[in-house]
Amino acid sequence: MMIGPIRGRGILEVPGIALGHAGECVRDRLTGVTVLLPPRGSTVAVDVRGGGPATHETDVIAPGTHTQGADAIVLTGGSALGLRSVSGVVTALAEVGRGFPAPGLPGVVVPIVPAAAIYDLGRGGGPLAPPSEAEGAEAARSALAQATAEVRGSLGAGTGARSGLQSLRGGLGSFALGLPGGVRVAALVAANPFGSIGTTTGPGTTGPGTAAGELWARPLLAELGLDLPRIKALPAPLGDAAAKNTTIAIVATNARLDSAQAHRLAQTAHAGIARAVRPSHTLYDGDTVFAVATSQVALPEEPAASTRALVDIGQAAADALSLAILDAHASAIPVGADWCQPPTLTDVAPEFATAFTALP
Image (cartoon, rainbow, N blue to C red; front, side, top):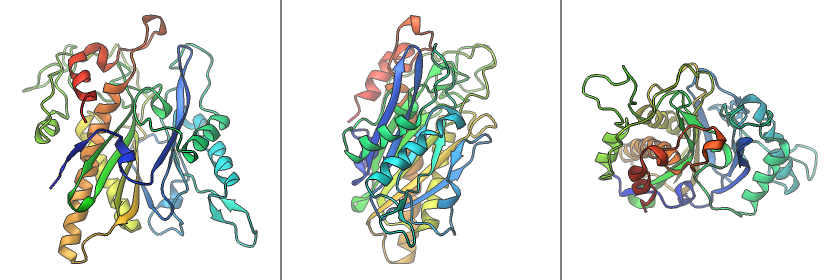
């Protein structure tokens, strides 16, 4: 049973989480990096489903590893080249003593920083410039200072994101859901999928029973009682623009989960991508979902009730991720024609985008 959707502060609705961003959204460069700091003692996990992932240190948070969780999670642009930003995050965290204590070396810590990247290379008109080590450090220091509460828009890892074979601009999006007993479940996503968020206007793009512009996630909106304007049309792809994709996300809850349960949460949340994007998890995508459990609210002690609570949390994570993907598109900032960028959802469906971004 869900209490309801919460757009508000998105993943920051889960207490203790901090975010920081760096990068540029200018005509010649659209890329960036986002750093999430989980509260100390959080359980962290990951599940990779896409066929072309660009990741860093995901094995150390796999079930069965000797892990202390993670000191930060990084979502970045720049494909594998953008993973160099992680070095800056590690440096910034080590400076403040946040990390795994190095055995036998007093005062030395080794920050554990898993990361994933989207492909946004060449999205601006300038020279190739993926997120840098300095920008990773900047984003980490911003999160450490809790200097920003921005959770959506054309910023951080979502700055250069696109979807639907590069026909529509994506972005960074976030959404939360409330459950009974004070449990919160939320998602943060850099939405850059090969697939589209709905049917498009080109020939052969709609199947039986579908209409041009219909969102794949429309049934979820109806189930949650979100009566939003219909989208009349989404832009059709202009040829084959593959291999430039990936949806990467973090789902978080304040529930107390162990490593195996957190891993199951990351697995279950992938359904949120599949419900909002078609096709999803392709060989062109590196779809990766991290899970964070901050352990502030205990699950019921009775086994059957505990299992049901886990199912509800997983469902909420998938729903929050679907909503976050729509949020990423609705929040993308329109730019001038001289930027030579695809349209945003605000450009092609202003009524929907306005209504969605007005959700509390």
